[in-house]
Image (cartoon, rainbow, N blue to C red):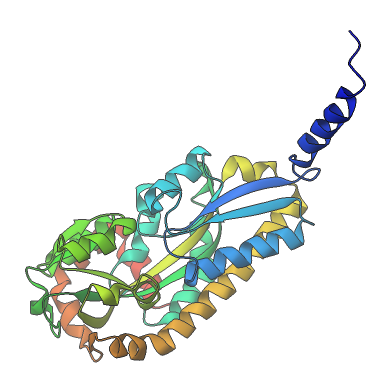
Length: 327
């Protein structure tokens, strides 16, 4: 059948249009999700990662970032990466023990002295050994990033000593170590995804929550919380995770490019946390929060004595001491 002459230009235009919709030759788009806003310590990390991957692979891989839980909360994101419905995520370790139980040791309260020690542990042999636990679960952990030292906020009263925590209904991560410790304080733990936290605080479903200063500021929790106590009770690491099947498709050179991009993302992430930590207290106080800065942490640790004994049996006291004493 012969086509009319006027139909040929239209067919040619349609063919060219369809070609323009196809990604550049060999380009692979990969989706990455975070639970907090783009203007955050996670946002700066994943944006850096995307730029570095693009640069280091000559544009053959394109990371498409999604923010504020657009593709799900942290646990859903980890599940997605494991199943292959999501390519990458940057997540706190809060829900990780549900997938890789060995990581739970890092959630023991007051395990780390400060940021310098925590970063040294994760970048050193202990942290690198833990990364090897992920591939058998269908996940590749590219690098340790950071969420930060967690502090407590609530809408009821100032928290100066452990007794002030009794009876407070507080949102926690879906993390059994946190929940066990917080119950010991007399807190009523209420596990929920971070994407639900602001509304729960606003509506009074929970009295308080605990998170690093970077999260408290990025999520504008000062609008729904009056009291902040700098307990620094748990250091919260984070991880850049990738679906193993996607990872296995990469050439050796591209694997190196992704790992190098992850290292740059971690640098940006930690620098933003240092920045946030330096200014957050003054900013939050200026916004009306009542802040307890000087906390006797030994009093909080003393209350946790029974759970520390349990953690020692569960993880091996020598493993806990290896982290605590790392220099």
